[in-house]
Image 1: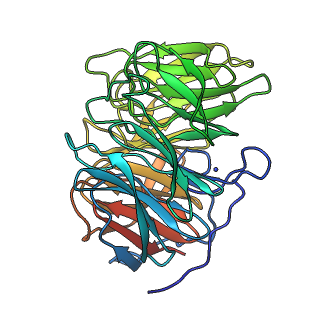
Image 2: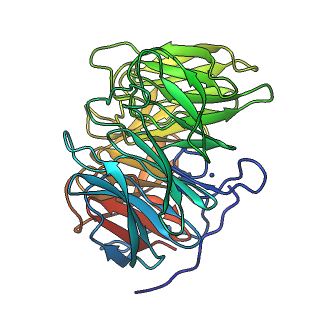
Amino acid sequence: MKHFDLCFFLAFILLFPIIGSGQEVLQWSGPDRDGVFHETGLMKSWPGTGPELLWEFDSLGNGYSSPVITKNNILINGEVDTVSYLFALDLSGKYLWKSKIGKEWMLSYPGSRSTPTVVNDLVYVTTGWGQVACLETRTGKPLWSVNMVTDFHGQAPRFGFSESLLINGNTVYCSPGSPDTNVVALDRFTGKIIWISKGAGEITSYCSPVLIRLPQRNILVTFSKTNLLGVDTKDGKLLWSYKQEGQDIDCQVNTPVYENGFIYCVAGNGNGAFKLKLSDDGTKITEVWKNGRCDNLMGGFIKVNDYLYTSGYEKRQYYVVETTGGNIVDSVNFDRGTTNYSDGMLYLYNEKGQVGLFKPNGPKMEQVSTFKLTRGTKAHFSHPVICNGVMYIRHGKSLLAYKIK
């Protein structure tokens, strides 16, 4: 097994941002939860068989969650015999330990859903049945836990609780989704309630929230079943909501992206892709455009300059959307799946197990290299992670590490 250097970042699944003095956070979908990994010196093309496979760990249990890479270990969730565990591997892919979290989702698409969130020496996880737990990062020792169903009378959505927890300072946020408890803020050291927000008073969706920082306030932005919500992190006040239109609109999954006063979203049902203008004080939103044809369900999207890059759902292809008017300006036949970005390149991982390296060239996506995953189990739904020149892809019970630097 090859060893590789530890990854250090001054920034937020899967790398390290600073949220307050001395606070090192690793989380869902990169430092800013936008699918962007701040690496340099990565390969600009791959061999026909793909980049070198450094190692495979094939005993994770069932699941679709991504890993987080700390200075000392790799943390990832998996289901074994109906139970959710937090697994720890060393940086060369060797098993260290696993810690029991609680009952895992065993109905539609059984297995773990959410990615752990790490803050210094503590890690925060959830299960598909709503168990929220805090553990020691190095040992997996449980410190506290609550349950979104039994403690906050939340209702599990039809594919199970799936959000990856958001941390801000000493607060962790979760979304039980009940008529009186849409979003809850907890003390991250004790699990005690700080505030409860009714939000839109409806069941939660599958979105992992994002934090918008403004001079006047911080805003937690996430989806409930049919609404995009903007919640003041100081007291849980609902500042605004944006109603989704359409039928069967309970699958709002992708994390929104905020940039320069605008919120971008791409959803698999409801309004599809849309752009909102956020007021300077964060208390109001105005619709700029929406495009129902751009309907990515759960693969995320990337904003590079004036374009969004994402896959479709009904039409199994990737799209390029210009951000001024929301028009689709290019499409590429590469099935449908996830989208990530690092060092000037797009990393696509589709539901047929193909991994593609594409160049975002303004209104065009240019295919450079592809290879097919031949290891792992079940559906290809997980989002890859890029850290220290390594691309990590979870495929069911396997975590694969590819050298891409």
